[in-house]
Amino acid sequence: MMSAPTQSLTVSLGAPAHGARSYPIFVGSGLISTAVADIFNSVLPSAGKQILIVSNSTIAEHYLPTLIANLTAAGIEREHIQQALIPDGETFKNLTIYSEIMDVLVKHRFNRDCTIIALGGGVVGDMAGFVAATWQRGVPFLQIPTTLLAQVDSSVGGKTAVNHPSGKNLIGAFHQPAAVIIDIDSLATLPAREFKAGLAEVIKYGVMADANFFAWLEENMPLLLSRDAEALIYAITKSCELKARIVAADETEQGVRALLNLGHTFGHAIEAATHYKTWLHGEAVAVGMIMAAYLAVQQGYLARTDAIRIEQLIDAAGLPKYPPKNISNSEWLELMARDKKVKHGKLRFILPTGLGRASIFSDISSDALISVIESL
Image (cartoon, rainbow, N blue to C red):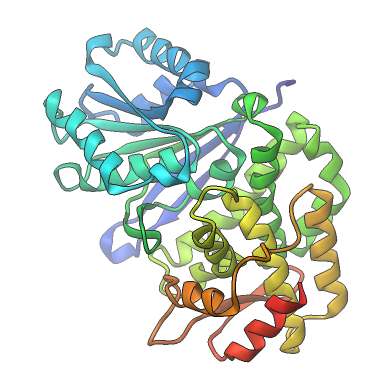
């Protein structure tokens, strides 16, 4: 993968009355081997030198020695760096694994001035972030996402969580990272299916927030699929910029941040119905966006031509277009009723109202939902 100039942006948070908070996002090539220690020292100058790196065996094999070498070269003692490797997969984002990571912190007597580093995809980032949010009432952490999905979505915005058997991300906390370090070189080892799953979240930003970016994706999808460095850095930076803007306006999802869940109500139902084993998150969100688009058409909020463009772009990215056929209508409704976006007893749907626009709706009938489900 050819190198391209590193980009950076800032996530700004907090009302002035409480003191502004912010953290940087860096997007570039070779950052794990060259920049992590410098960023660590710049954003956490007074942090203690105890570091726990949370990762999984697949990612650790590729990047953990490089990360540790960069940290130790900057003067952090090797004996102060511990690691917790968790099993790979959404089914392991649970309280049992969370407790095992906590056991590592207890065993090595980590203090309140320690730092947690998440090195991996969304499961690792969510788990490490939740550990950081709850260890001794909260300690700093760095996000080093190594999948496209995590780079453009879960690593930015401070959502941390584990799953409950009854639903995804039901146990969690908002806990912002000290920095996000996105090294596109990590995408070189990402399987094609997982890479395409990450593109679903990239497409989501164009659908719900930026029509020009949507058009750029239509033009440049072949470059992205070839993992062109310049195209990747642009798409990742633009996605993070759009998410950062929304997170800054609504950190704890009381309003506009819910728009980022476009496609997720249907998508989470697909994941839960298949027990998080056969569908990747991005694949489920891709189908969920198509379902949301045609629901919006049915309700008169979106032109059919726009829904077709959304479907065509998802297809061009090599993502699935149709939900599994073995979910009954009653199961669909039951699973969606468990969604975290239920408010005041009403299920809220994020629907596109045009390319680059979306709104929240809570007046969708069960009959309308079943009609869309049965049409795909």
